Amino acid sequence: MPITALIFDLDDTLMPEHPADDAALAATLQPFVDEDEVSDEILAKLVSKSSRETWLEGPFREFTLSVGTSSLEQLWAPEDRSTPELSGLSDWVITFRESVWRGVAKDLGLDPDSTWQMMDVGFQQERGARHFAYGDVIPVLQSLKSKYLMGLLTNGMPKVQRHKATAAGLIDFFDSVIVSGDHITRKPDPILFEAMLDGLGVDAGNAVMIGDRLATDIAGAQAAGIATIQVYRPGNNHADGGEATPDHIITDLTELAEILN
Image 1: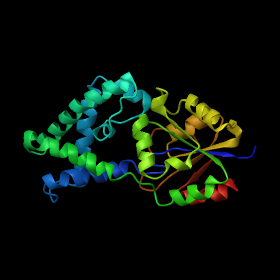
Image 2 (image 1 turned 180 degrees about the horizontal axis):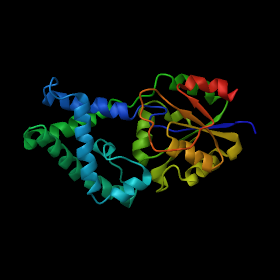
Image 3 (image 1 turned 90 degrees about the vertical axis):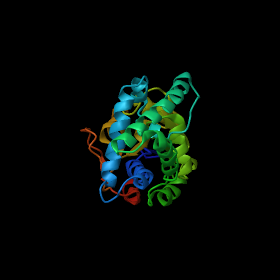
């Protein structure tokens, strides 16, 4: 069957997520430490550990796991009160952020009372300045837009994911956008892929899923009968425990043209 629709993952497929997190953490915390003694990698691990431990002890662990957001993301995510669950989460995140940054300050030997708020505001600003697409993405999407229906299928919180895609200049390329948080489930649930097919008005045999994660993007698409292309970007961590085998593997979106033609 001819391919008429392309479905894209967002994070670490179209725009860097983890590298942007690490860069923002380094920019936030280096003013507080001696960079010769504390590396950017150590700072990133310190915050990730503190945020993960605090998050796992909190009341929204199961909800956030179900939609595929991370504790680190909640250190900068915009407030969302579109549902009762999200409203409650937005309230609790205030306490969560204070707890995390106080813990980080203490681990760095700093006075939490005088530093945690600066860290909190600083990280939100630094992370907000890093919503951008990989260099190959926009030119390729521009070339594909007139030839295919295009969908964006991403795990995460609805407002967060749409905010990132908009800030990176990507949202207008897509005919349908589905965020897992809207459905209270996450990839690889085939329900999300089937909802995308319905949104685009195509059959599974007419679509291709393009994403970086084997366990979520590739396995989920295959369960829904959709062909798959893995974007294996050098330097990204692709060890997600997935064992699915994609139909194709690329390292750059410019390689799509040869596969699709």
